[in-house]
Length: 289
Image 1 (cartoon, rainbow, N blue to C red):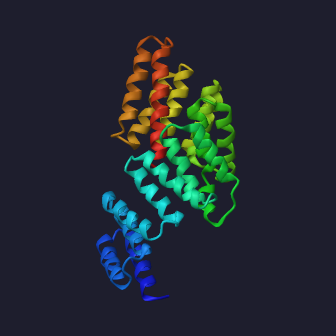
Image 2 (cartoon, one colour):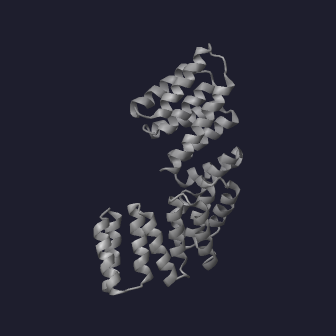
Image 3 (tube, rainbow, N blue to C red):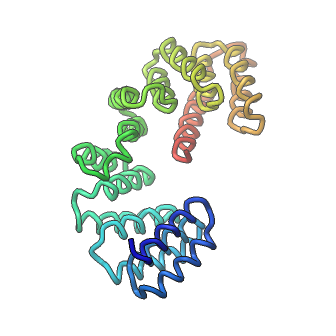
């Protein structure tokens, strides 16, 4: 390994542990050794990305692309940074450029599908995810453990609960005990009206993951659907002990109290609102993990 490779490798190590200034010092030395090297500019871009300095990151990507326009990895990494900047359409263009250079580049396909999903283009996202399933390559291992979950989420957001449930179950076979897959299965059961199955699945999820707040919210909704308002509030109070500042728990307690104040009458408007609120927060919680 030459001096340049050692500098770049050490800079990556510093970036991974948050020692950004040290990483930049090494990259400046690398730039002096090998001016106009696309790998150096790519390393600058990744370090600036990790720092949250996205404008500097994009500037470095552009320099790397000028020097090596046929590297799909540079385009893909630039797309990932653009996605973080909430520039979804620009990110898609970079992923598509990467795939023009290498149609089977799994990393680009994966992030293209995630971007479509974030933009609400669920059917397009499903198609790309399914293309990923057909590719066996060295760079495909990093996403295989969650691809069925991502497809299931797209189907769920489309309202295709049967198809979603199939993929969530497939995901659970790959990652047994996965809390997000279990939660999703519980939500699918609730959509089908299979309340007992939903309750049992969500109870099991909480047993395995006692600090997993989305499961408490979902279980409270299942109890509410059964008219068990006291049980729903009790489970939310348990969640509030674990997460005292979580506003979603407080909101759900207020909503269920409103139902209870109606002498147990089934207020469909509020139930629908709670359901949609939990789905929205569940989706956001997962995407932020």
